[in-house]
Length: 429
Image (cartoon, rainbow, N blue to C red):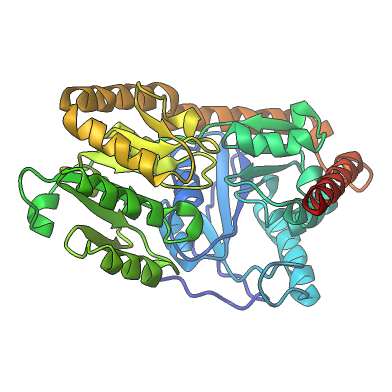
């Protein structure tokens, strides 16, 4: 494990000696928790696919686990804490830490001769905006979630060279803020089929002691409220009341685990729901005999695991929220239901249990859809073309006198205030 250094130190675990002038060095900056999930997996797959004949990647992150995975790709990596200004957690006003990040960012740019900065989430743009302007570089913000107005403003997301959104709902936020259309691009996440096509040594029924005729459901994600695991558990209880021999496997960890455990006991589902915790063998689990993947998410801008399930010919039941309809085609590669509707999820489970041929057909179509729309090669090629466009002209470089989208900021604030006042008036009436 790579130890996190204090913010005044740099930990360069691998440094490339290739000084070929044909290559452009890119600084990838990732801010996140110490796990490998959606945005982390997307960045790792992109780095693995990146054309090293054209680009030399350098990674700067705050997660030791992420740094460890980057090391395996033989890429220069720097790992240290990232204090945010005006964040949701203390310390909210660490100005010393903030200015230290700016100083270190400038040092990294000079040391590695960086030509472009890629922020793999919104938060690093808070200090990278200043780094990029000081060094006159293009800044690309790769956004994997929707941010509230407070974060869009404090991170400076309106002022980057290019926003790359993983789905239309993410992009819509900034278009509604009146950002220039050309400044916002949608690039769907890519699925690394080679990484997911590993030899399967698991049998979920043998592992959990399930019967041969059990209908095995899986849900995966952080055990947090917006993933809606409680809705999936409720749907399981309703489906079992209709004589569906369903069992539910939940993969993931998080603060809602105790709450979900209590719900499972209250519904008398102790022998029917299995909380497997965080797993590193997700690809094998998806090949271990899962019949159906179920999501209860109340917010999901893409749904990477839904696409991964589809790649393994597992049909998906998921709510029609966020970017999920871009991944799942209703009645073709899965079934879409209303948000926060466990009754509809249960009905869909029951329907697919009694329609095994249609269920298998959905799985086959899901695999075809993922292979056609979301290959990692397509994702990497599109992002590389964005890099090439950004590097082709100095007009994309940030500087102190350009790329300030103050109009977008003002319009977004005005819209927010109007909406808030309207809601208050509605409540009064």
